[in-house]
Length: 138
Image (cartoon, rainbow, N blue to C red):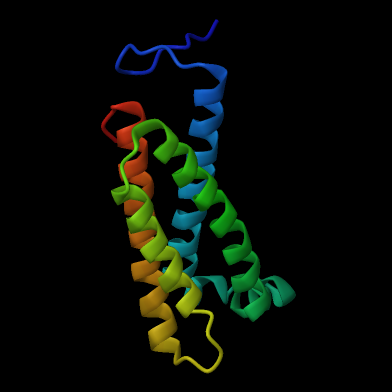
């Protein structure tokens, strides 16, 4: 039988558990984005179409299309609970940088830099949001 208590001994409602799930999904997407960017040379070793898809513009657009709504939902739900703007502003800065990496014609080094810094800002925003919402440390 699983307890509804967090590590800090606070009981969580079903709504709070849903918010935790959204935050975890959004943070996971940010981590995957960062890993994708940094591990791209290894991803090229994947066979055929799968390896090429990780390089394609469509992969980046699909990843961005998942990251933005999940991040916005997590930051909105977090703000409703803790009323702190810092996590959302940090996360939004990350989203803006990730969007900048999708601009056509941008150099590969600029795209990589924007993606890495944007992912890190987004992760920092999720970490702050989690801590503010739960009162727990990461």
